[in-house]
Image (cartoon, rainbow, N blue to C red):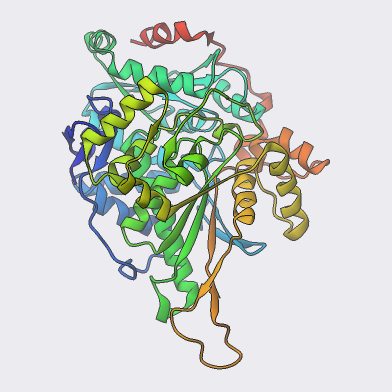
Length: 486
């Protein structure tokens, strides 16, 4: 598979796209041509290994087979045995639990694999991985790359806004090759700085003079995006299997994803391109509702208001992965994507052309949950079925309820008798992106009692560990924090 930049079409192999992170023109790498697979053409997959191997064999097919296998082996070694990402029913919804990794967030899956891809791509070169985080990517990157020879990780996170557990996960690691720096700003500030540094010729030249190459562990990196596609491929196969052999691979379902940087829901979109029978993609936002407004109007307008909420990993106004969707919606027209991104830079907003807007509106829906609604939804779900949601997943289930999910549609095959309804319920898959144990403050407020009684082993001793990462910088100090690691 060849990858191309979303703007000027720079071409790269899979390994080069991982190693570079961001394309030379500031765009993001996308698969040049995803092989079209119709509904019903997915193989019968029963495990995460099979799903990952299937996706990697298509989109990272130019990586050696042993590298792909090693990446999947490393992933599975860092998750509980059995079912790393279970699909469970709760109050009529299908909850895809993506949070059973070491840091309790969906990013653990890809960030368990990325070090293998990166080491292969680096070919012995020293890599400094710069990462902006709103709370989860940073700790997952630090855990994923801890002790990996030839790599160093530098994470920038907001000094205000993360949960206590998120902060401890970034400030307690003491491995010599991982570093976390708090910034006096928000995620958007950190992400903008990291992108600017990637594009800064002088900084890159200084890094090269010290034998260092800069790369990224954010979802701008293809090594983060591609493994996430397997979540939805596996969910599709499981739902089809549950529906029976006559419907295998054709059981349509909708997906609701709590979205911040848009990478997870974009992975679901790629899964549909590979044959997963997904109907609607629902982008669930907190009150930083840029994405929900975008998928409903085709206008991307971050606005001026930024709010710190109880779902901090979604406190984002400028989402990088939307650019990849723009490339798809505009049929690979890099000039149009560059125009839109220039409008965002110069005018503070952009609007899709009518053709692209029609495609967007046909596939996506959006909705918003306020902090108060989020906590109310956490209580409602617990009372309804005993399921404990984290605040991000609660945003998704709250939005799903507001939009009437799970939905019913007319049967494709007419009913065969008076007792058979003429409509069928379409499964609604909710991406559960984090464990509630990452957000004890919100859980205590939502439930009025301590419901977090059995923390994951990796959480149990966090508060007993010494703080190893103490640096705090203002925005002007970010460049120097990077140079200090050359």
